[in-house]
Image (cartoon, rainbow, N blue to C red; front, side, top):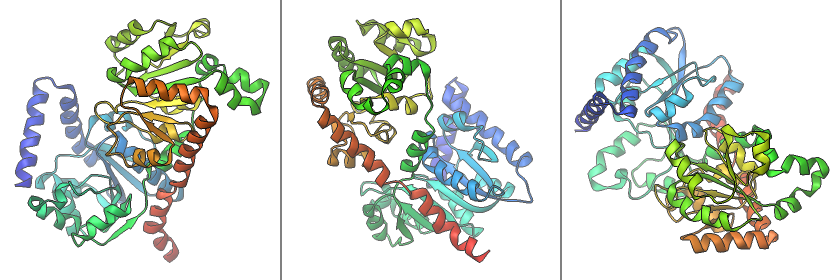
Length: 429
């Protein structure tokens, strides 16, 4: 039944790709190239460590472990696969992987063929990746299989009566490195006990991003931060209180419906707005709603930056570094699809505001509990919260410290997993 469902899914992807669906077409073309890469780019004399991530978010969770392995063992070969174009297209040139490709659909034929081309030392599936045919073939070849940063909930198929056969697949894993105790307890109910609570490697990644965050002269100039720091390096907190900057990341139109009116009325603050969808139509919609001077990042001159009070980030790849300029951050998605990357902002030690759709995001829930993150359910709550932060710097500082400390306290999962898997081997050597 499982293989038949996968067959139907693959057929559907091929059909919509034929009719011009861009994402499906990229997936189909990418999977076709996979076989060529495996045949001609895989070194048949080497064993590979295989990392598989469904998309870009899962890759970012696996990335700290990949780079930890490469740092200690640069000679080891890394095979990195993606299922989604949103991951592959962004990271197809990732320098720490020796081969990057799409993962073919999980049919018995594809799984056997895939493992025929590449000899594997170990396999790491990130978070929610449970491909039955690949796992079955890996088990037959006695290849160790690890699940990294996985998290389990009672409502998942593994714990439903009709998902009974999934538990046998879970037992084929060598070890699970889960995010929390609840996941460990749920797996135990299925007789899956090869489990260790290690936390989420995402925290390691956001710390790495913070340490490597780029400086953007235009954003420095826009916020006056660089100029102020030159005058008095120890006075940055007072400066933030006097000239607050609201950074809104991954926003959707529903977020912007109340963010922009608040900004239009509050002339004491500046705003950096990074929409989730960067399209000309969306950018124009934003500009039409703004009544204060704004400028797009990619089109801004130094003169325009001086006049602007809202900086619109109209490109991808900057947001994780731009949060460093925030007095307060708003992370979008909580009024629709679900909040985006909260730790990416919290790592800078600033308060983070989110919408109500956050119950499935463990880090957001825990940040809410300790006060590093604040939830708003409507425009009125958003306005009241920002007014409070701007009027009472001590409350803002307390929330920011809670957010930053939470990230730092939860770091280290990648190092723990590395030691668990590789240290015994190193000691033998």
